[in-house]
Amino acid sequence: KKPPRYQVLLHNDDVNRRDYVVKVLLKIVPTLTMDDAVNIMNEAHINGMAAVIICGQEEAEEYCEGLRKNGLISTIEPVGPSD
Image 1 (cartoon, one colour):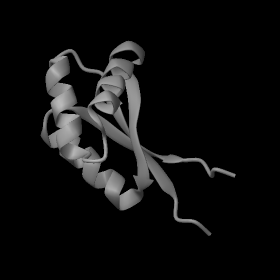
Image 2 (cartoon, rainbow, N blue to C red; image 1 turned 45 degrees about the horizontal axis):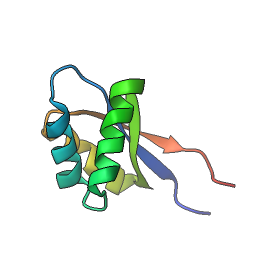
Image 3 (cartoon, rainbow, N blue to C red; image 1 turned 180 degrees about the vertical axis):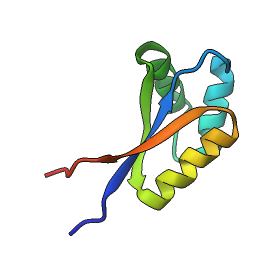
């Protein structure tokens, strides 16, 4: 049985500037490219939230915590089985 996967979600807020959000995403999630971070920020801005990354639970909690410590609104939720 595969370990459960979690997605880290970024929620839109009216406080942080867009360029700051991109900077935090790049700092906290090193695998993201600038394009990824801009797309995530735009999606959260337009749709209210966006998936940042899908990974194991421990990693997801670390990313979520890192985003929150930088003033962003983030949650994690389990992703359904892929098969």
